Amino acid sequence: MLKIFNSLTRSVDEFVPIEHGKVRMYSCGPTVYNYQHIGNFRTFFFEDILVRVLKYNGYEVKYVMNITDVGHLTSDHDEGEDKMEKSAKEKGMSVWEISKYYTEVFLKDVKLMNILAPDIYTKATDYIEEQISMVKCLEEKGFTYITSDGVYYDTSKFPDYTKLAQLDVEGMREGARIEFSEEKKNITDFALWKFSPKNEKRQMEWESPWGIGFPGWHIECSAMSNAILGKHFDIHCGGIDHLPVHHTNEIAQSEACTGEKYVNYWLHGEFLNMGDEKMSKSTGKFITLQSLIDEGYSPLDYRYFLLMAHYKKKLKFSIEALDSAKSGYRNLLSKLASLKKSENGAVTDATILDGFKSKFLQAINDDLNMPVAMSVLWDMIRSNSISAKDKLELAADFDNVFGLKLIEAVEKPEALAEIPEEVSILAAKRLEAKKSKDFKLADEIRNEIKTLGYDVVDTKDGFSINKSSS
Ligand code: AMP
Ligand code: ZN
Image 1: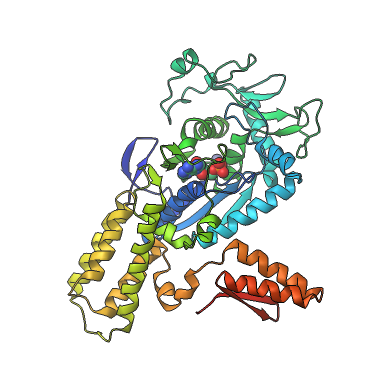
Image 2: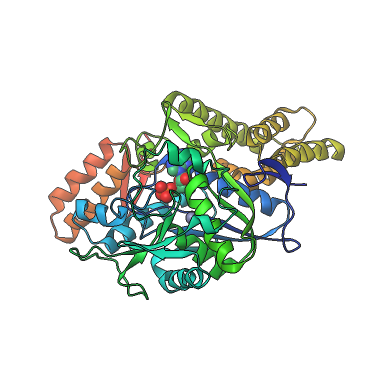
C-alpha cells in the first residue's frame, strides 16, 4: 500500500486513486527565462520518483507538466516585471527566442538526469483561450473585480482560501512588508489578467474581454490541468515555495469556477540549499547541470546524490557530498560489473529474494523513502545468499524506481561520460572551419580538443566526440 505525505491533510495518507488503477497527475514545471539549476532539478527528480513509484505499483499514470512562458512576474505579489520580458530585454533576444532556447536546454537536461518525460508538456501561451474562459467563469460567479492594472480574484469570497497553507491572513496584514497595492481589496488577492502597460508594447499580449494584456501566473495551471486532466484529479506537485501562494491560488480559482474539489493529494519537495539559503535563479548564485558535467560529474552522479536524501528534508549542496555520491555510484557500478563477470548462476532461495523485494517495496511506499530503498539495494548486493544472476535481475528491477541506468552503465560505462560544453562548442567550430575549407584551423581545433581529453571523429552527418582512450 502506497502512503504519501499530503500537504492538504498534513499527514502521511494512504494513496487511493479516483479511478481504479489510474492516476492523473500534474506538476508545475519550469519558468523558461533562464537556465534551470540543480535545485529546480531536485524538484523535477522528486516528481519523477513519484511517477516511477506509482508505475512500479502498477498504476497507469497520465502525467502533465507545464512550461511557464508568460505571466510569471518578478514578485509573487503581482508587482514587478514579467520574468520572460525582462530576460529578453537583458539578453537582446525576443521573448519567443528566450522561451525556445531555455526550454530546449531544460528538455536536454531532463533527459540527462534520466527523468521520464511527462505524457504532455503544456505551454502557457498555447492555452490563452482556456485561461480567458476560466477568468470569465470566475467573473460570472462573482469572484473578481477590476483595478487600473488588471482583473483580480477577491479571496475573501472563497472561504476555504487558507486551507492548504493554513495561512494567517490577519498576521500577514499586520506585518505586511510585501508591496500591497492600494487597489487590492485583500492582501491575498491576486491577478487573473494583467493589462499591458499603457506606454509600453509588450512582446506577448492578447485581446481579452477586459482589454489587451496577459494572464496572471496562477491561472495557467488551473486552466491547463482542467483542459487535460479534468476538473478533479489525483496528484499535484511542485517545490515547497509553491504551497502558500501559487498552489493556494490555484485551488481558489479551480474550486470557485468548477464548484468541485480540485486535487486530492498535494505533494511538495523541499529545497536544495547553497549554504543555508535556497538555491535560486533570482540571486544569480546557482549551479547548472552542465557546469557539473564540465567539472567531470555525470548527471547520474547527481541523481545518486539526490537519492541519498528524503524529498521532504532540506538538502545542502556541496562538492564534497557530490564527490561522495559519485564514488558511491561508481562503486555500485563496479560491484555490478564484477557480478556480470561472475559465473555464479546458482538458484537462490525464493524466500530470500522475496524478502528483499518486500523490503524495497515497503521503503518506496513509505512516502518515497529512497535512502532506505538504496540501503536495501546495497544489502542485497552484499548478501552471500543470492546468486550473481539474481542480484543483477533484482538490481534492474529496483532501478525502474531509482533511474540510475544501472544495467546500461555496467554494459557501456563510457556512456556515463557526458561531453563538456566547451568541447561541443569547439567541435561545432571545427565543423564550420571544415565547411569553409579552412583545414589548418580545423586541425588546430582538433588538437585543442585532444588536449582536453577528447577525440573528434568525422561522420556522415557531421562528427562524434569520444573520450580519448589514453
Ligand atoms: P521555476 O522555474 O522557478 O518556476 O521553478 C521550477 C520548480 O523548481 C518549482 O517547482 C520550484 O518550486 C522548484 N525550485 C525552485 N528552487 C528550488 C530549490 N532551490 N530546490 C528545489 N526546488 C526548487
Ligand atoms: Zn503551477
